[in-house]
Length: 256
Image (cartoon, rainbow, N blue to C red; front, side, top):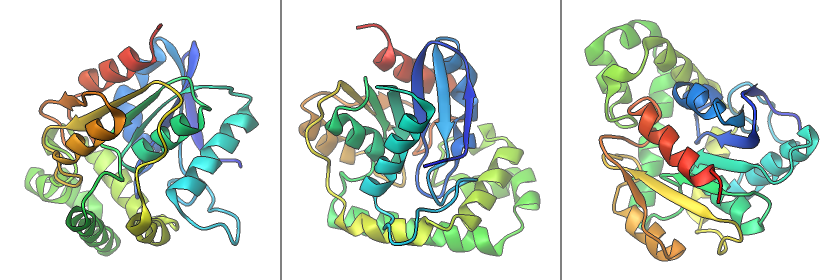
């Protein structure tokens, strides 16, 4: 299906997939670093950002969103790209690796490795953030350092590094995404995907307050490999430490 995307650079294709309630602009801090060696394509998932919703009758689930990304790649003529994703996007990256349709997959704090209590915490926090985003005027809050910290502190470890304009855009994206509620509800049945057929890398923010860091232990057991720790980073680490995030993705998607 046709999705909104931003593309830059040259080299082997690399698809970037955002998390629930977010949008492709969340990857902006790392795009140029990645585009130095890749044809980078950041995409808005169906029902999020500037992309249209899923067709009538198609449920919002991680699997159906992965189907949409796979179809999007086929529409662009991109075969076996590298893929990197954050949160829900991290799960989608792992799902595509389990299908064997990507060259490599990098999953940053991927969804699906939670306990029941951790799932309820995640859903509760995201519902609260969505309600807040729909009720607020983000401009004045984003310009105020204290307001920025209160608004984004659960998602990033270093709110001071998040540009006010980026916080405004992210808040508006969260408030307006039509796929949010159904996707969030589908998390209740989300389990880790099948074993991957493509090489994978998993990384986790040291200060992830949404998908708590101990979930990385379960991800390590599932994958049979050590999970990389993103020191000083939160759940959405691209603004916390762009150089570190880019280096993890580039190492995973480099020559083998």
